[in-house]
Length: 213
Image (cartoon, rainbow, N blue to C red; front, side, top):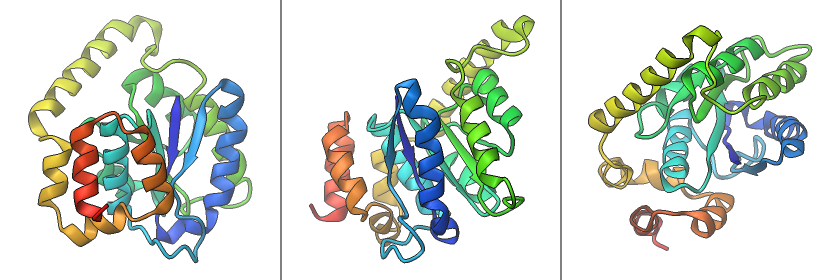
């Protein structure tokens, strides 16, 4: 699994810590971590939590990554932004229990974490335990066991609902404010990785059009 990490400006200083913790947990499981920044508070490619959502939408809809880890101060803004886009099912995660239940019950492909709220002494340990439980087992296994069938059925229903309530990602990008989108896609790490791994020609063409590549 390819897992993308995205940080916005208010919590960019924690990017190195978050990335190192994520890699420590998931690389031994055979997963790959791709860091899209921000790469510290001084990173010139500044991202808002809304742009986190745009990036998550582009990466997941293109197939460039399979999962996105993101967040903001409370995690709420990033979660709302991510869920604005098609084929992104983002959970707000505060604890290892949240992580495990979101994975098993909701089977999403994106999580938003609070990187400021309650992130004090032992914050990196909570991150580690969250990542361990998030990827401890294949998603959608269900919990408790007697609820597996209805939970899997409800997930399929939700996916079908999102297909109706959202248009395609390329159309959305073209309708959004051009500077907002260009800023989200301006990162060197994003462009290098995206064009090498994008599986959707239409979305790749759209991104090239927007950034002037």
